[in-house]
Length: 405
Image 1 (cartoon, rainbow, N blue to C red):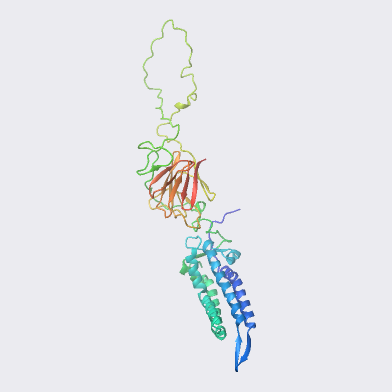
Image 2: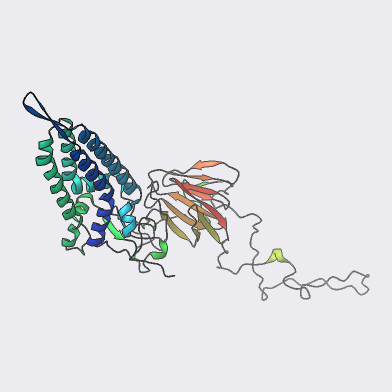
């Protein structure tokens, strides 16, 4: 099964279809309650005057209006959290903020006011006039206002048809800075890392940038901290069992002459000479070629959303990570976070020997490291912390576990 990489703007037809489906239930309830209420109006003559009994209309109309108001708030809350509504689900579209995530209450409120403000005014006016017993004003003022509001709402919903920028935004979208995508024809950005998408969707041709200062293997950065281990002075933490490299053997090097052999040597146990022994017999004396780098452990992080990523050097992790001017060759690790508890570029990771230097990039909600024995250390912004495998790093409301492959 192929993966949809591109986002596709929702068409005017699908937008209108979703709006009709969303408003079908409250319109049906209002029409039914008002129709039954109007049919139940009775008139009596009292002292030469005709008196209309609108008690049933007021009761049923109030029920219909109350249902509509509650329905509106529930629908708006659902859309704010997920970009989804009943109509959006059936038509296969999602509304988002400018970055492609769940729109939030502010965006949905502005969209709703521009789209249904006139209609809502007509409904409120009808409720007030019903409460005052002004049936004539309801029919000649509130009802036409509701019809005008409905026509305006339809016009706003399909207004993206006149947008010169690829029919991307309607009038309400431009005011609220929102977007609407067709998730049947393209990718759903709300659940796949926003408009930029996860790392697997990122373009391969990244703009040329310059390297930035980062922790260097073998040297702890100034002001850095090591979690769960001891750092030798002036260097990075040594791996367990690490031995100093032996100087390479030079067969051409001059050696002092050996002592002369005695004429009658005493019996002795024969020990295999260096030439007879196998070079692999002494594993502790394995040597490193001059200039060759010591192999690093293969480290992986498992994010709490199920992502399992192998680290390959420097990486940036966040909601929508991006390198700063002057940074180069960074692995980008986006983490979907509809609640927006993590920053766009939350953490900088750098593999160094048997662990990872983790730096908080001045995030809003902060970060912390928990070692395997349960000791938690909060990260200070801009200060690199050395994290050993087996530890857990919390960033915002999310976390990842550091392990070895």
